[in-house]
Image 1 (cartoon, rainbow, N blue to C red):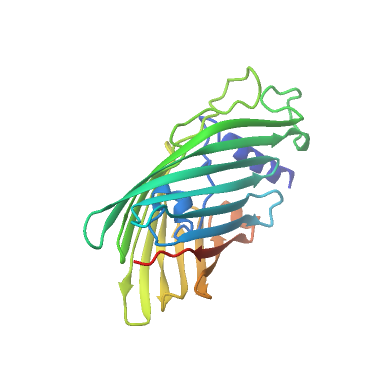
Image 2: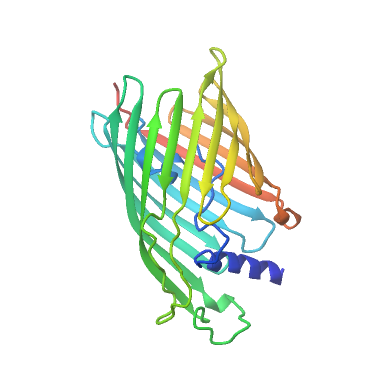
Length: 302
C-alpha cells in the first residue's frame, strides 16, 4: 500500500512536470453529459439553463485515489439564443494533493443554415494547486520542492472551444489550459517546468432514428496531451423516447465503460457510469464510479 500511495502522489505531482506522462485534467466517462465543462462553446446552445453536478470516484479500492467534484451551469444570454454564458467550480483530490478552481465563459452562436449552428467560446478562471506536506514521507529531508507543510500555488487558466451542432449530430473541439501558465509551489525553486499543459479534445456523435421510440447515437472522443499517445473513447448509446438511455464506450489503454441515464419530471436528469479497468491498475482496483445529476430551468420558447 505504501508503494501505491507513492505512485498516486508521483502521479499528482509529476503531472505538472515537463517529463510527466500523466494528464493534468480529470477524465469524465460521461463526456456527453459533461460537454459544457469540456468545451465553453456549448454554453447557450440549448434553449434553457442547465445545472449539473458530477462526482467521480476513480480506482475504488486504492486508498487516496483520485476523486473529482464538479458543479456547472450554462444557458442562453438573450432571447435570440445567439449568445451563451456559464461557469463551473471544481475540486480534484489525489492523496495529499488538491486542485480547486473556477471558470466563467462566454459563447457566440452563428447560424449556418436553418438547422445547423456553429458556436465559439472562451473561458477564464483561477486554479489553486495545493499539497499537504505533512502527509508525505520524503526520502530526501528538507526537499526544496515539497516541504512538510501545507503549500499552495495559484495560477490563471483559460480555455477555447468550437462547437458545430444540429438536431441529429454534433462535433466538439476544445483546448483547455490554453495559456500554459507555471505553478510555483516553493519560493526560488524552478528546476522543474511545473506548467499547465495544453490538452486537445475532439468529440462527436450522430443520432440515428431507428423508429418512433428508439434512437441510436454512436459517440467518439479523442484526447491528446503532447507528447503522449492520443487516447480515444469510442462507443454509443441506445435512447428510448428521449427519456432513458443505455450504452458504453471503450477507452484505449485504460478502461471499458458502461453507463445509463434517465430524464424524469421534465426537468431532472440522472446518469451513472462504471469503468471496468483494463490496464495494470485492475489488480488493485475494482473500477471507477461516476454520477451526474442535472436540472433544467428557464426554458426559452421559440
